[in-house]
Length: 427
Length: 176
Image (cartoon, rainbow over all chains, first blue to last red; front, side):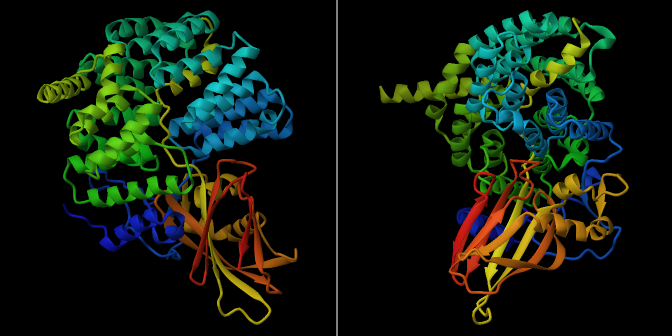
C-alpha cells in the first residue's frame, strides 16, 4: 500500500497515543481546511506541519458556519432574544433546541455544548423544569451517555407523565439499546400524547428492527400523510426510515429512491449523508461517496466514509486519510471523551486491518448500543478475528429480535455454522 | 397531522433515534508550557503555546467578517488583538505565595490539527519571584460550552505533567 504520510509522523502519532497526553504536541493531523473541491482528487493537506504564518491574507484557513445560512441567522436571532430576556425559559429552550438541531444536522458536537450552557442555569435548580430535563437528556443521548440520559427522562416522566418529548426520546433510547419491548410501550405513549402520526412513525421505526420491515414501510406511508403543515425535517426523517426499511428488505432501488428524496429535503443532513454513503459503499459505489461527502469532511462520521471510499478505490491517499482519522479519534481519547465504538470498531476493522482491536471495540460498543450496524460490526469483527464465540450474545439477540437484514443474516449463518462445527469437534 | 407545530417541536427527538452517533469531536484547546531552565535568579520564566480552534473563536468573536463561511488569514490577522484579549482573560497564573505572575503574549501563528486550523498563541509567564508551586487557572469557553476541554501539558526539565482542564477541573497546582 502506498502511504504518502511520512512514517515518522505516523510513529509520533502512535507514540502520543501510548504516552497519552504527554506528547500530544508531537501528534498533529493535517488541515483539511483547504476543502477538497474536486471530489476525485480530494486530499487533505500534508500532515504534520509546525506552526506557521500563512503567506497571504486571502488564504482560507477554516470553514465556519456562514451567517448567510438561514439556520445560523435563526440561531443568532434566538440568542439575541434570550440575551434580552435571560430569565425566559421558553427563549432558552428554543435556543437550546436550535443549537442541538443544527449540531445534529451538520454533525458538529460543539452545538450540544452550547445548548448545555443555555439550559445550565435551570439545570442547576433543585427541581429543573421538565422541558429543561428533556433538553439535557437529548444532549446526553447525543454524547452516548445513555444511562444518564435515561435517568433524566424518567425524572421528567415522574413529574409530567404526558410529556410527549420525553416519551419520544425514551423510545429512541430503547431502540438504540435494543430494548424493543420497552420501546413498544414508549411508542404507545407517544401515540397517546403526541398524536397518531408520530406514534405510527415510532412504531414503524421499531418494526424495522423486529423483522417487520414490510409493515414498517406501510406504517411509514400512513405516517407520511399530513400535507403542507408538516415540516421538511419530519418528512425527511420519514423518508430516511423508509430507506432503512427498504434496506432491511434488500430492495436497493427503493432504498435509494427514499434516500434521495430525504436528501432533497435536507441536503446537508449529516445522518442522511452518512447513511446514504454507507448504502453506496455496500453497493460498491465508492466514487459516488467522494462526490457526496466532498464538502462534509469536517464531520468525523463523514470523514470515516471518505476514508473507506478511498480504501475501496485503492487510492494512494488512503494512508493519509487513515492517519487523520486516527488523529481525530486520538483527540477524543485525549479529552477523556465518551466512547465512539461503532466508528472506532469499523475503522480498526476496515482501515487498520486489525480484527482483534476491532472485535474488542465492537464488543464494548455492543454492550452500549445495538442498532443493526452495531450488530453487523460485531459479527464482521468476530469473523475476521476467527472468534465466532465472541458473537454468541449478538446471535441470541438476533434470534430474539427477529431482525431481517440481507447483509447481517449471512454473517449470522456463517458464525452459527462455525460455532456448530466447533462444538461438533469438541464432541 | 394533528398539528404541524407539535410535530416540529418533537421531531428533533425522534430524528435523534437514527442519529445518535456523534459526528464531530467537541471543542478542545491545547495548552503547552515549558519551564525555562535559564530563568534569571529569583525569577521564573515559563514559555507557553496555546492552540485554540478558529471555529471556536469565530463563534464568540465573529472572525468571519464577510460571513461567507470561509475564514481567511486576513480575517484572523485583523482580529488578533481581540483573540488575545479574549483568550488571556481566561488564563491566569500565580505563585504559591498568592502573588500573580504576568502573562506576556509574544506572537500568534496558525497551527493545523486533525480537526481544523487553530490560532497558536505564544506567550511567556513571568513570575517576579521563584515560587515552589505554580497555580494555573483556566476557564476558556466554559461559560458558553461546558464540554470544552483544555488539554494541558507542562515540560519542566525532564519532567512532564499532563491534565485535562474542564469546568470541574479548572485549577491545577504545578510543583516546580
